[in-house]
Image (cartoon, rainbow, N blue to C red):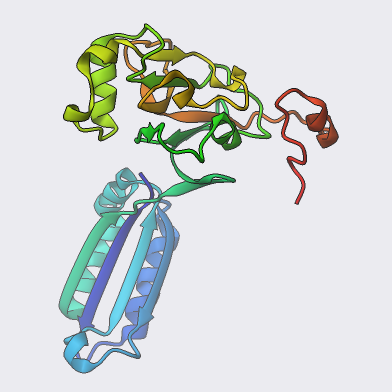
Amino acid sequence: MGEFKHLVIVKFKNDVKVDEVVKGMETLVSEVDFVKSFEWGEDVESLEMLRQGFTHAFLMTFEKKEDFTSFQGHPKHVEFSSTFSLAIDNIVVLDFPTLLKLYYRTSVGLYPISSINYTSKLVTISDNTCSSSSSSSLSHHTYVSISAGFPKPSKPNSLLLLNCSNSKSTNNSVCLSLLQTCGVHENVVDKKRCFDSLFINDFEKLDMGFHPRDLNCSHYTRLYYDDDEFDNPKLGIRVSFDVPDHVPNICNECEKTNGNCGVGLR
């Protein structure tokens, strides 16, 4: 969840000195710590039929909804509101949270970020889809490219190969549940073959040329687990940004097995 906004759009009475009202509001927000930022403006472009008499807009930003609630009950706000209400002919008020969406850009596309933990220095990337193994353009390199150049997280990212024919693992209910979550229609899945799934604890240890179709698996997805909750996998991947406090020798990457030569160069 992002910040919280308090938007007020008003039509002032004809005899009101708007400058004095604005100064009063500026004084209010400067004296109440809950307000993160304040801005206002007067309409200069809208057609009268669209404006409907409204002329001024005031926008306050709060760090969180609780700060807005505290602001509403603050004695200085209560006092100003009684004066402000006498100056307006009409008003529209909108109070809403901002929906902040962050994306992680990689060489294989954009992925939505679901959370950032600054204590453990982990970025959790949402990927609520399963991929079909029928695609010939995807390989293990696609998975690794998402976290290329970053340290490995404390807990590995996993890979689940679904509906395979050359392996035996994983619980049937987990397989069916994940396929359903991934949007794979039940009729497409052979329920008996759902027992034939393969869980790979750390997919970064796979050979770079690996592809799920090598095991005749119909679908695959990336997984991670919280606090060893192995019965509750989450779709996505985690990337560590716990970078050492020194400048790495990026040429060393070229010498590593499965290294990413040139990472860090622009």
